[in-house]
Amino acid sequence: MFKHIRTLRQVAARPFSNSACRQVENKVAAKQKMFQEDNGLPVHLKGGTKDSLLFSATMALTVFGTGYVVYELFRAAMPKKNE
Image (cartoon, rainbow, N blue to C red; front, side, top):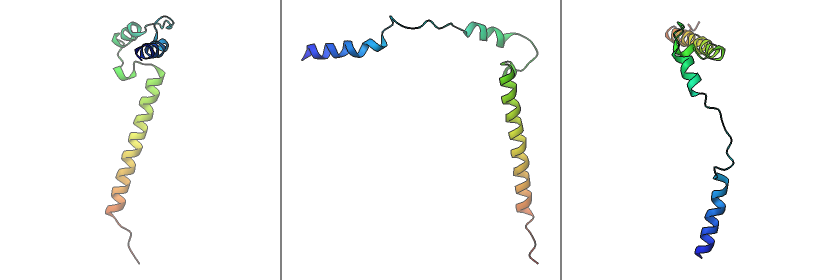
């Protein structure tokens, strides 16, 4: 019984072995250097083009959403007259 459990543990542990792991380059130091340099940009735009695109899209959606809410509030406050 214990022999089967020990064999099962060995078989289950094989896919998680460290012998065949890939070497992945550590990019944390480069990212820290990029975000800590003083180039006059706010931290949410230091990531490059992708960050500025996401920021612009977020601001556009925010402005559109705010305008739509104000429009709907005005429309609800001034109901149509029945003639």
